[in-house]
Each structure stands twice: as structure tokens, then as C-alpha cells.
Length: 492
Image (cartoon, rainbow, N blue to C red; front, top):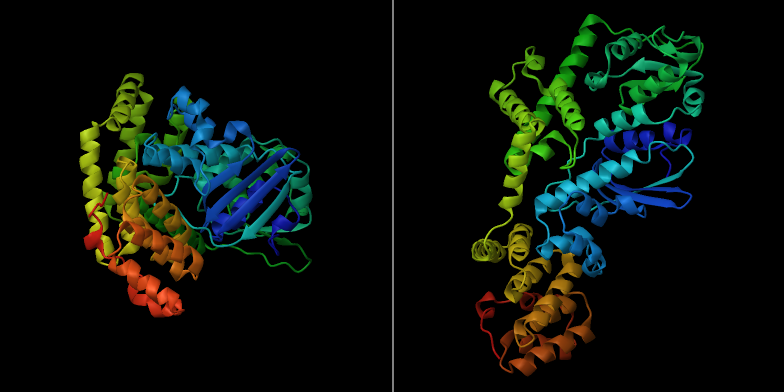
């Protein structure tokens, strides 16, 4: 798919695709191919959530090992953890190899590195397929797309197609939301577009080389701060009055406030590294750059012109400052890294207790008909203690209630059956799932197996009788609800 009416149709580069996807909250898959390289980025409402790549150094296993999230032995056996219909990260998490926080950090690092590695190329093949993408149930990877755009554009090699793109175009100021990325000279240049300018009639400013001038225009464009349109002899000069300028500034600050609220809501669950948006392998310079970038956005002095909640601003900025002071001090950072590592090294009995609590909470939510919420707790229980068939069984039962989870429900019913082949409940659940999908032959086989184990199983008998009568599945509505009271009656 090509974005019609945009620069994507005339400028084949990752920057304009990120602009169109991020600022228009699009969902779908962006594919990139160049020679032997192939990548697929998945977006949900403008935010990247996953990448599939054939570049070895960008694969998740390589990233996890590089970030010291997995041992060398696990890395050498990484193929053993790849399962059908399950992402590698989820497989490693379910196996207890990594924590959710480890996976989130690695995914963020992987996506950032893979996107940035795409910026040097103007001769690749791009294709965006817009479609619904299921977001992860956990917190999305922390990816700052405007930061990626700024970082990538500044470090990519200049290409003459940038000048060709702006040739014959009119440029006018749209907003100043990301002006904190800019140097003073760049801000002065952006200010000139308060009055619309035809680029061909505009002299390159004295402090800019021709290449830097067009690179800067491209950065403004990708950050959605300027409008670019075809020039004509009757173009209107869009003069921003003082009042209009103040409105732009207020709009920018209000956007920052919404970001502060989102950051505060996740402070307890984020490590210092995630808060600054850097990896555990970040250098001292990378940490410093990340901090000063955030300080430009969220320093309390920036919000003096608005009646803003001072406690909100101070809480977030103090957290950012604490993270920077800790990670920029070698001794404090070493202690903090040890603390992070030890947080995941709980005793098996403690993990088992936590898993049981999560399981009971999930089971209660299931009984209340809150299936999506139940899935969250049950998956966490399995992550903490994987070898429990009853955990997989109730998870599968919850998943079977939701159309988007039917395939996953089948997998988890099969896991429960594999772990406890003598328990009829797994076969009944799987049989009713197949029945609800109209797979009568498969359903009959599972129900018959359940009755072989427990000839008196009421639900299995009733469902099989209805099936053999040739009733439609809509007539089986009352049978498609498993009775939890029999769940733990283990019959050998």
C-alpha cells in the first residue's frame, strides 16, 4: 500500500513512512526489502509493537543475549524454544527463562535498532498493509518514534533525493511540538516558515550548508512540524500572529502534560533504563543524551505558563532525574543492576505461592464472566509456575469464550491434556471448543475420550447425545460452559 496524497509516493524512505503511521495512528504491517535484507514492522495505533527480521544481529535471541537476559547455553539452544504459533519471547517467558520486564526491554531495543538501521537507505522497497494488529496484553514496548526520527535523520548519509523532493514545493509552519529536538539555528529556520516559503525562492541560511539545509527540512517534515505542498503563483502567505504563535506553544505544552500522565501511570513498573528509554548496555553518553532530551521536554520550568498540576510535573521529572543520577554514577549503576537481577531470583516456594494467588484471582474472574481479565492473571500464574495442568485448563476455558483467542484455547487445552492425560476435563473442554466451531468429528472424538475416562461425566454425555442427534451448535449453548466444580477431581 502506498499512502496517497503524501510524500511517500515520491520519497521512498523509512522517515516518511514513520511520519504517516505515527501521526495518523495507523495499524498494520510495514515491510522493507533491500537486496537480501527483509524486515516487517508491526504497528498498533501508530506505535511499533514487534519486528520480524532476517538480519542476524537484529533477531530477538541475539538481542536477549547481548543484553545479558539469557545465558550462553540458552542462546546456543535458542531453536529449541521456537514453537508453532508462539513468538520466541513468549515461549522464553512461559518457560521461566526471562521476565516480562526483560522481554519488554529487549523488544524495545530490537525495534529501535532495526528501525535505525533502515534510515541509511533510499533505494529499498517499502509496502504498508493497513490492518488491525492485536496489541500485546502487557505494556507496549517503550519506543519514542519522534526520537527515532530525529536520531535517524541526523545520522543518515545525505541523499540528493531530499533536494529533489523539496524543489518546487511550498513550506509553511504547522506546529512546534518537537522543537525541543532542535538547535537554536534550526529553531530560527523553523520560525521562518511562519510565513509560507517557496523553497526554490529561498536562500540557504548562512549557517547551513546546502546538504544540512535540506536534511533539516526533511527532519521538520518527518516530525510533522511543517506542511509541504505544491507551489503556485498565487500561494497564500500564512503569517502567524503573536496570538497564533502562543496557541501553538500552548498546544505543545498540553501534549506534554498528557505524556506526563501516561509516564506517571507506569512509573512503578518501569526500570530506570526504561524510564530513560535506553538499554541495559547503554553507554554513559547515551544515558546523558537521553536524560537531557527528556529534560528539554519535561522540566518544570516549561510549564509555568499553564495551570498544570505541579505535583504531576515534579513527580515525573524527579523520577527521571533519579534515574539519570543512578545510571550516570558507575558505583550506583552497578548496585542498581545487581538489584534488578536479584529481583527475579526468588525462591521456588515464593514463586509457587504467587502463582497460586494469581491462579485463584484468574479463576474468580472467569466465574464472573470477565474473561479477558482472567487471561491476564492466568498467564502470569503460568509464567511463575509452568508445570500445572489446571492453570492451562482454566486459561483455555477463558480463551475459548473470546473469538480472537480460539486458536490459543486449542493449544492450551492440548497442553493440559498432555500434562494430565487421565483428566477428562481437558478433553471435554476441547470437545466443546470444537463443537462451538462446527468441527463435529473432532468434537466427537474428544468427548468419547472423556467418557472413556469417566463414563458418568454429565457434560460429555449431554454434548455427545446432542451431537449424535444432529443438533445445530446453536442449540448447544448451555453445554458450552464448563462446570468448574469438577475441575480438580483428578481421576486416575
